[in-house]
Structures are given as C-alpha cells and as structure tokens.
Amino acid sequence: MLKRRSWLGLAVALSVLPGVAPLPAQAQNNVVIFAAASLKNALDEIAATWSKDTGKPAPKISYAASSALAKQMEQGAPADMFISADLDWMDYVQGKNLIKNDTRFNLLGNKIVIIAPKDSKSTTLAIKGDELARALAGDRLSMANVDAVPAGKYGKAALEKLGAWNAVKDSIAQAENVRAALLLVARGEAPLGIVYSTDAAAEPNVKIVATFPEDSHPPIIYPAALTKDSSNADAKAFLDFLRSAKARASFEKQGFTVLVKSNSST
View 1 (cartoon, rainbow, N blue to C red):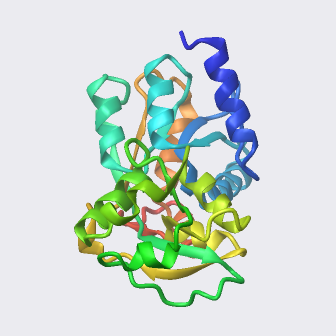
View 2: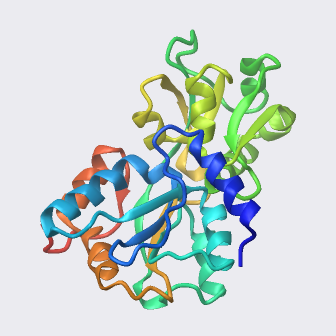
C-alpha cells in the first residue's frame, strides 16, 4: 500500500496547478482514469460529452506525470484506465501486469515546442548548439523532469540531438509534470520552457517561439489501456468513445494528432 504521506504529498503538489484535480477516491459508479497532465483540456471536454450523451456519471480523472501515475498503479492505486504520454510508461505497467494487454492502443501524437511569456520580446528562437543558452542569458529553462516525465525526456532527447543540451543542462528548472513547467513560464518565473504544443495552445499567457523538428526526438505517442483490475462496465465504453468522431474533434481542437480511425460512436 502507498504510504499516507506519499498520497498527501502528491495531492498537495497537484493542488497548486490550476484546474488539475487531486487524486479521486474510488467511486463505484464512476470510471476512474489516470491520465497524463497534458491531456486535461481535451479529456475533460470528452468526459463531459460522454456523460451527456450516455447519462452516465462523468469519469473521475487524475492528471499527473505519466511516471507518477504508473508508480501509483504499481503501489495499488485504484484506476480503470491509464493514458500515458509515452510508450515507456505504458510498457512499464504492462510489464508489471497492471493492464489488460488486449485493450491497449496508440491514441494520440503531439509535438514539443519552446514557449516564452506572451509579453516576451522573443519571437523566433534558434535552438541548435549554444544559441538556446545565449537566449537564456543565465536564466532558467523550465522543463518537466528530464529523467522520468515524458515531456522532459522528449525535450532532453531533442536538445541532445541538436547539440544544445550541454550548454543548458545546468540551467534547467525541473517541474513535476509538463503543466507545472508550463505554469512557470505563464507566471513569468522562467523566460523559456519546453512543453507540448497542446499545452501552449491551452495557456493564453504563453507563446510558441520554436518548434522542435520531429526527427530530433522519439515519436510522441499517447497509448491508452484498461487496467487489469478494472471491473467497471462503463470503462470499456469510455475507452471505445475515445475512438469516436466526437472525441477526435475535441483532441484535434487542442492540437493533438489522432492516431486511430474514428469508430461509429457519435
């Protein structure tokens, strides 16, 4: 069992992020979803649509770094579904026999970008070599944890590929998840940050100043699956709804690339 102080610490950490829900108690009639923090805007809308269409209670969704959610699952946290921001953490829980393997599929794609506060003088930023370090001018680059959180891992890989990592590695302000990294820039506490393009689109107080080439990092893929212990009959229905035309519209509105064909659900 997960220690009480660990649960409390995570709940407190999540509470500082606007609109990010703390961990829900397991509810008998609600689908419980563990989802990457970057999915919040799209998935909240999809959950509301599904609830309206079906008359079912809206899913209870916990948003955090995929790494944190995977570790919670490993330690017995109750959930019906996991949507990760990378393949590695879904592979991890699959390796721990925590998901129903036959329900797993690749749902979404995304991009990573460099952002600045909306009132920043920066407009277009070069990334290669020491150009990014020069732009920072001794200040901090906000990123999700580069060793565990998918957005941070993608960002580090891209900086390494572009020859920029060594010049900035000692200037990283690491956050617990990508939305926390976004918040540092939105508040003006960091002049630049690396987040998903969908995060930048969801935050009016930042602007994109550079987009990483797709070949500079591993493909950004969000897999989804039901958990092995899920017994909620509505969980499979909601997972199927993620393939629907309505869900596709919500994902695409936020800037995600949908990797699955739409099913007949409306």
